[in-house]
Image (cartoon, rainbow, N blue to C red; front, side, top):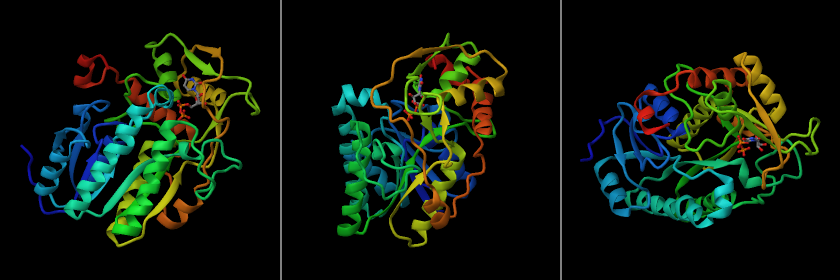
Length: 340
Ligand code: UDP
């Protein structure tokens, strides 16, 4: 049975049991917002939500959404519930368009019906595809090269139309490489299967994984491996909070790139992991992974200037150290019984 939130400003966090969503829920609570999580637990974890009301269900379920919006007066919706594996999006695009696009339209429809007109959307650097220039500014051409990136860009375009036609205000936040873990050590990354570089390396460092594949050593970069802009999950959440406040203050829709403006190669990340953990992290050099652009580095001038966003945990060592502290807690609580 759904419960009414107290009369403080309530935020619906869709996908709040997942990696970034669960960190956001914690920050919202600490910042005095009432919070309700909607998550189908396909990728999230019940115990990551802790004492916040959790509704287990899908944003594709219009009836459930109508009931939820009727029971709570939400000031805004934050949407973290998307599928994120680029490779899978190539082999099963239907899954990505059904969830990341069609179900998001259902969610937006329910918001409009309920008069909830503020939306924070998790977008991605994948909307840019292979950028012509670095660092990547918000206004560079959007040429996504896989269904995952296309689904994100389509929603961004939908949101532009919905603002123009219906006045629905949205902040789209394009994450570069989200990494790290809650500095208090209470939350962290636990995708299943894990595909991201830093957690995979840390699993190897802790002995949970034999080796990590390095996908491609022949890129046109100084050491031949891909360059990415890693950004701490706690800093991403700070940006969401600033975006939320902007909308609550009557601010206009906007899109922001979120990174640290500094690129690290896969080999540099491996060195940092070895340095931070003091452990062996066996790697295997393999062929390129299809769809990987050689370099993605954000220009975050806009987020700094307009949102006043200032990452607090920008150093790669800090990002890796926080993720390592979380990895060392494995197995994590009740989820261990699920094999995670
Ligand atoms: N990568 C790798 N081995 C892995 C996973 C990732 O070499 O097992 C590389 C990947 O090719 C990319 C970088 O690490 O250049 C970051 O990949 P990740 O999947 O973490 O994030 P993405 O940039 O794809 O969003």
